Image (cartoon, rainbow, N blue to C red):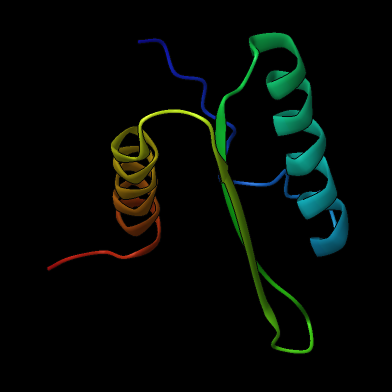
Length: 82
């Protein structure tokens, strides 16, 4: 199985909103080109609202595994362990 990774790190020249929109544009392009079958999104808004959505048209464990891998990559990139 081949996976595509959309960078977790926005371009430093992007403002926060533009960084979010840019990541959404990237993932939308990949979804259109690859025939995406599952997606999970979590978003936090400036007012503190947390929004999530998902669609799974494949084995649910595939999506759970992808979310766990993303979680670990995110933790590794944001938290330094001593």
